Image 1 (tube, rainbow, N blue to C red):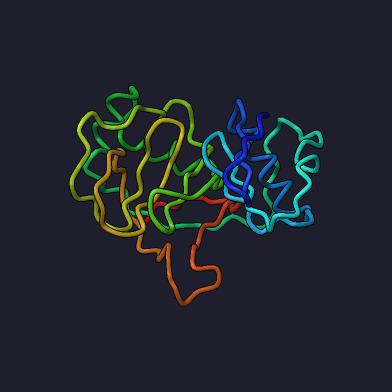
Image 2: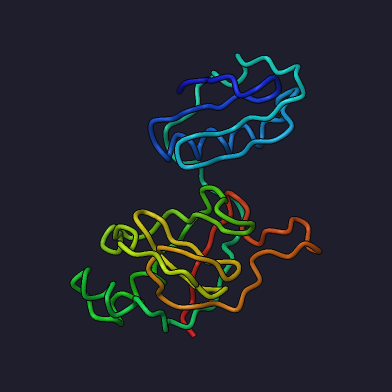
Length: 197
């Protein structure tokens, strides 16, 4: 774990693994550390925003390397498995289309962090057999609600945008709503399951 100054009111903490990042971000979010204003996780970093009074030694307390177990019941999202890349993903993974669907919706996921656009949650828990690199050529238009995979992550596009992930299907869930508190349906730490329709 490395602590790097990030302006006068933030510290960027670097980790070697995603599991270390998730455990630390969860711990700091729930610890009510004096001076901490926000905890913003990413793939291998956590940005700790503070009010200028943070004692950084509070961030160095031992944090387990095992991913913290999220609390609460999982959010279940209904998915129509009709994505443009579903057959290609199945072929690349040596599976039938139905086997790929069963594998994807048979796993339980956890939101590791959010980014790319409001409401886009990076979900960990994708079975290793389905882990493929991003598409070599990104699409200029990915429809809102597209359920996709890339590398070790699963995700859902909250609105239409460009994107380079493999599209497995779509959901009608509203992932970002400014009138909701919080606006993101899937904040970090949320457990997620996919259910075929």
